[in-house]
Image (cartoon, rainbow, N blue to C red; front, side, top):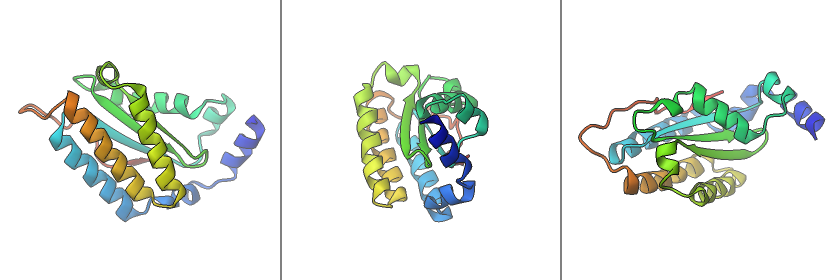
Amino acid sequence: MMLKRLLKHLSSPGWWARRAFRAADLAAIGAAVKASETRQRGEIRIAIEGPLPLRTLLRNESCRDRAASLFQSLGVAATREANGILVYVQLVDRRVEILADRGISALVPPTEWEAICRQMDTAFAAGDYQRGMVDAIARITALLAQHFPASGDNPNELDDAPTLL
């Protein structure tokens, strides 16, 4: 299995894997994150990755492990209220992971994140990447608004634009 995955990633050029998200899609996703963060205090970070780095492949890291690494390196773990969310899309493996910081994990059960991931999988399978991501952001917003409603002190701690890796 590891060899098959390794070859799949090594033979996928980054531009080819990321073609699913056009510039207009990325702009719409960034706008959805920005709008979301005015309605709640959570910080949403989107990471979209084509082929995995060779080091990640050689260590046979799962998509969940890769998302956990990005959670740290993209600063999601460093939010003031421990209210960061990472939505990680691994295009070559066709996986979606949502990781929530400890402040959110204590209040929102993992089944909620799993349901959002499956909804995204369905939209992505139909080729509708923008709708899948924007709908997921809307569902995340609704969950965060329940537990982290917007208040007067609501700094924007993370970049709203999706990161292409």
